[in-house]
Length: 557
Image (cartoon, rainbow, N blue to C red; front, top):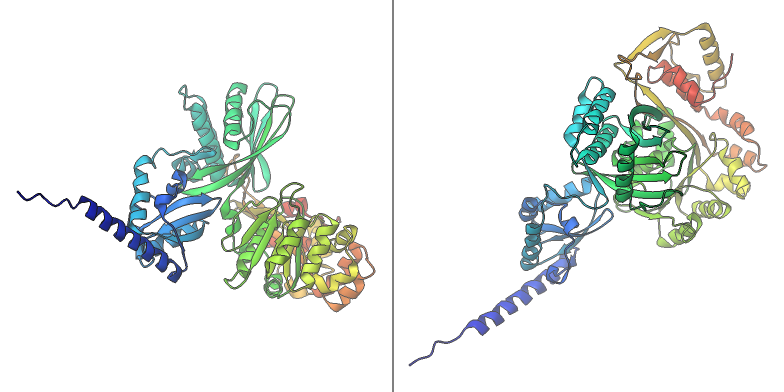
């Protein structure tokens, strides 16, 4: 009797050979397509990274995310020529992710996709993340009185008796903050209640009062999210977490400090949309903008922007960096901390005493950069290394804390910089402020008073380029809110002034003159001061004179 031939072992060997051949082919093709090779059967798949792409899209594109580090994704793909993959790649980059590509075999792809069975996109909530009800954001935003709608939402959530009450309160707070375009959320304990305030367009607005019990529950939840210690209430703590606004992630920087009636909490919303404003929409006067467009494209030099905290310096520098970025240009930043991530740019962060701005600059210049951005010049070492970098073939962007553009140079001297180097190193010194923009639907025009006309004449008297003045200076605009909840303002706009280096100024700076003398000397350049820029914006109906007066010094008449 013939015995049947057992092919099990032979088939297994053939399958193994085919699999090795497939992996070898993936390895060979990876170099062709400029990607790295990976065998995902040997790699642990990060479940939270996997969530970034829904299973249906992953199958269509033959690609999955198997690891995530901050905003950098490890993206594995089966077929680089798949049209669905090209679309997916663009979508991920548009969401602010940087991609590291890996080519994989079909077996690796199927093994990775099998992990989707363990996930639920509907209920997934990561530690350190807070989902926000997107529908509630739209409901509050579209209401005729958004602040009243937020208060109603908080009343509803606070009245709940369910275990979800705190989660609903948190969601309502952040939904309201997004709807009202708030930059900061403040919880301030008082003797019998806790005040909630939002910073909207740079101004704090009182929104709601919580009872102490609700606040303590919220406090604990914020600490869990932020990764800070629950049992520490007698010293300051800082943390960070992520709010999920639909498919968009918003980073939140939290601060807890002890107070007489409990911990004060402030949360800054690091909305990535804030850095996506084109430099042409910042509010820079056209004449100044035309000159800056030339200056930021220099091969070497330095642009310094000055102003107090919260004056929009980082937004301005990021807008310039996005404008000058090209694939052939190497840009490196050192920041404290990295608040927003920019695609295509290497961003580094200072770390206490271990890695300072000066240490970072010393390392960065060895990384072959074309452009360097230093978050802030704070000390002698940083100032001198930045100047040296500007003198040796790099263009440097940075910030200082001074009141105006002319104050940049005395401040650098105070930090130990040599004024003789300014003429060769520094190309532009800017100063800026942010002020509220009038809501076009809630403003009213009125005639100027005689005192205001005298003040405006005094503001523009030193201006060398009289062509920048408006032909008609008879009326001004003021806020005209439609209800008590509104202010008549919506959004903010920048005020700018700048000084450009020339031979006369370089010679003048060698003797370290005071700021007011520098300001007089550069008036001949014919650019607006911040006060002049503000008054022009008020006359044009962009803002109000009272807002300008509250932001910059105007002459008394």
